Length: 389
Image (cartoon, rainbow, N blue to C red; front, side, top):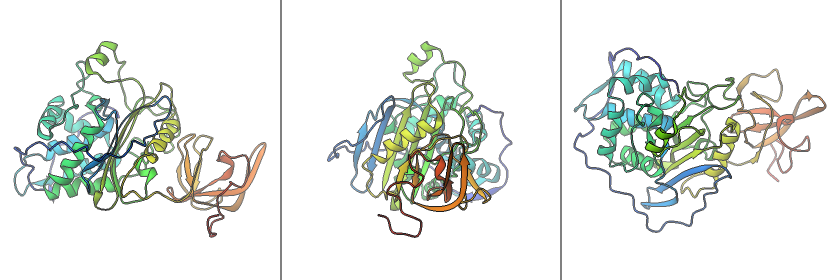
């Protein structure tokens, strides 16, 4: 997420949005009675804040360090959107130029749009306003010296749940629909070429809606990008970190959103990973943590999980290297395999393999030669078109 120059001013009208009431009362704090036993499996070396809230029962099913503060990365874009739409008046329409910013900001985590709203509407004052309006308890602006870095906004898992509860239960219907419809259209590749379908998007079948976040230096293997940095960040002084109570250095990877019909369950998983962690490792660890959670209404995809190796492994439309490329895998990421089939023989000396794995969440195939398994044919995975063993 790079801090960029301001974009052009808003122009023509397109989408009609009702007013956000400037005097709206803060959300009631979610109840915590009847909470299920914690099942969150936090991988070694990972620091996590977790909150899962079942809107049907009005209770949390998971809470783990839910009040711990993390730097928000792109999750703060939810607050930038709500602040822009707040108190615009009955019949307000989103100008075309703003719609052209807000949609990619929500769907593809576009940073240029976030830079625009941060600089045009008060920067840290946005966070103060939204914290008061929504009754957020742990949210705070970036620390002194880092005021231009919206991704350094402090946020907790429980505050993230509160933001979604406002959007779903308190915001005017046009606002709710605009935000949630865009989150449901999350693109696999973000504007900065990071594969953002991790966590919730990788752990559950649709329907889901997500706003993800990532921050820090990661290795290669992100939608084909090479050696990308998640955010252009300054060296963070220890006194600034201490003052904010937020770690500004370790790689961050967050998954937030809703899962199930009618947005039944709100999920917020905020994580930090050891320095030097590859994107594929962080992606995999966050996926394992998210899959371990008790998420009412969430449908788990069918298949078996395997690790992969290699950089920029191509996912193809069919089981041959000449078939169209769908995307490239983040290096070393864990993938769900639905079935396998014979196809073109692939050679990576000293190995050859004619079997290909179908990845249902990518809608394509990779050669089994890149799947971490001792045999050419994956164990306990059916041939495509055959019933599972």
